[in-house]
Every structure is written in structure tokens, then in C-alpha cells.
Image 1 (cartoon, rainbow, N blue to C red):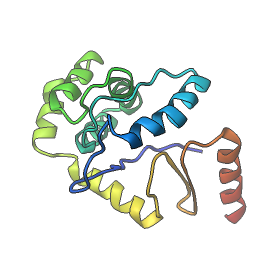
Image 2: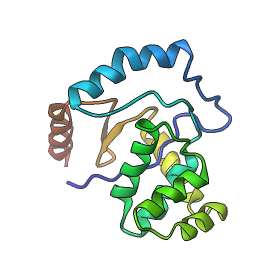
Image 3: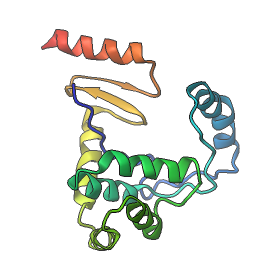
Length: 166
């Protein structure tokens, strides 16, 4: 089994972003995110900004092309969920690449030229076709899907279910 991360913007233009100080995000983080993060031993804090994520997805596609997706993606998550950095900012994204010893000037040029925008849009088109409307989403062999944080048992059932269909 292979796990492949795909781009998915929760709130692409023109959908408005959410206010981090608003009731909805405050309640969801208090009631769901913080308790889950604590159970899993993961450091998370509600970011002070809710940026558009397309640039971060483009940067992740760039890192994938260089065989560094996993570590770059983890760095983006830490920057956003631990430090509250604006992951729509090219300077933040290139700094993360530099910290990993990657050629940040090449990432900057790729983002400026929107070299990976079509790849991100293709991932999003495919997600719509599969009925994905939230994150995280787990799709097995394009036949079955689960959305939301799932226990390992549910993911195993998804894989067994799809294997039985083959």
C-alpha cells in the first residue's frame, strides 16, 4: 500500500477564510483539535492567521519533484500549527526550504512562475470528482473514502474493503 498526499484547499478563492478569533474556530479547537492533539502527543496551537494554502501546496509539489516531499510537508505543518506562520507567504515557504538545505531560490522562482499551480488544481479537480469535501480524507484505489481524523482500525477496514472489491 502506498500513501500519496494530494493538495486540497479548504477555502479556495473566493470562499472567505475564517477568523481565528471567531466563535467557530475557537470552539472547534477547544472541543476537538486540542483534546485530540493532546491524546496523540502532538504540539498544536490555533494559528493566528488563516491563510490561503495554494502556495504551500505548490511548494509541496516542488519538494515532491525533488524527492523531499515528506520532510518539506512536515516543516510546513510545524510552521503553521506549531508556530502560527503564514504559509501563504513565499518568504516563509522559501525559508522552510532553506532550513532543509534545499535551493530556496529555485522554489521562489517556481512559485513566482506558478510552475506547480496546475498540478495543485488537478489534485483539487480529482478530489471533487471523488466527492472529497474536507480534510483529512483517505481515498483507497479511487473506490472508497473516509473523511476526518480516523482511528487506525477504520483505515485498515477501508483498505480491506477495497481489496475485497478488486
